Image (cartoon, rainbow, N blue to C red):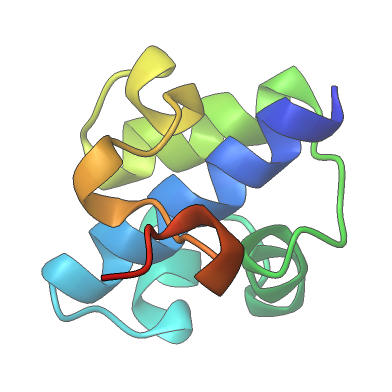
Length: 85
């Protein structure tokens, strides 16, 4: 469940920023409060399936795309993960 929340946080923020939307814009489009969206993006909330559906519908995207793990392009690495040259 924790990994799913992290995936949702990452995907929601990434898509919102790619579309140049504010939290307020997403709140208006989805019916989910700005405060709850902010908590979701920070990984501080475990939204219900119903809330995730509202976000997906309001953002006009699939439910499953909100739960996808980040691609390697977006993954963060610590210095210990990078080989020393």
